[in-house]
Length: 311
Image 1 (cartoon, one colour):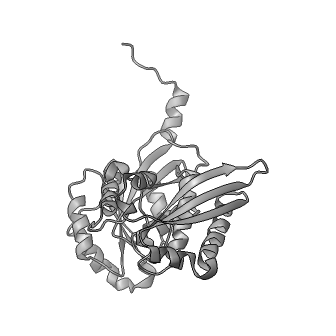
Image 2 (cartoon, helix red, strand yellow):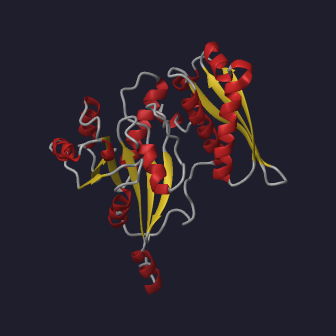
Image 3 (cartoon, helix red, strand yellow):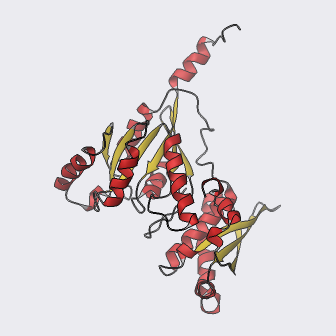
C-alpha cells in the first residue's frame, strides 16, 4: 500500500494547532464547575454551595491561542451509596482515563483529607500526566500553600502545580497558557466557536436543576432530577421548553411547588432568564413536578442523565 502523502500546507496547519482533552478530577465541592465556567467564559456546568451538583460529564471547549482545550467537568469523586452515586463515580474515573491530561483540583482550605488520599491512590495507577491545581487560594494564608503542596506531591508525582482562585480568576490565565503548550499537536475536534457539546435539552434541564439546588432545603436536591420533555423552536424564533422535576417523596413535591405555587414560579423565572442568555432567544419555560419513588434506581432516569453506561 503506498504511503499517504501530506502536502506541506496540510503539515504546517497541523503543526501549528494543538488539541487535547483535560479531565477535572477532585472531591465534591472542590470548585471544578466554577473553574470550568471561568475558563470557558460562560456557564456550562451548574454551580451550587452544596456538594455533588455535577452528575455527568460536561465538555467545555476553550480556545487558547492556537490550542483547543476540551475540558471534561466530571462528577465529584466520593463513596457511593446509591446506584446513581455509583454511576456518577464510574463516569468520573472513565473520563479521567480517557483524557490526555488530568487536573487534580483540591480545595486548599480543606487540604489533604482522607477523601483526597483515596483519589490520589487511584490516580497513581494512571498512565496519563497529572497536574495539581490548588483552588480557593485567595481564601487562605499564602504560607500554608507550600506545606500543603509538599504533602500532596509526596504522595503523588505531578508534572505541574498551579495555584488559582476559580471564583476571582486569579491564576487561571497562567493555567490555560500552560495547558495550551502541553496538549498534543493536531487538528481541532470541534468548530472554533463551539463552547460545549452539551445538547440544549440537557442544558435546559441542568439550569432548572441548579435553581432547585439554590432555592430548596438540603435534603431535596439529592432526591430530585430534571428532564426536558420537549424543546421546540417556534416560528417567531422563541423557544418553548417543557421540563419535569421528578422527586421521590410527596413532601418534596409540596416544598418544591411552595405555597400557592410561589417557589416553582421563582425557580422557573430565574431559570428562564439564564436560558435566554445562554440560548440567545426568548424562552417559554413550563415546569411540571411529579412524585416518582426510587427514580434514582431507574435505568431510564440514568439514561436521561447520560449515566446509563456507568450504572
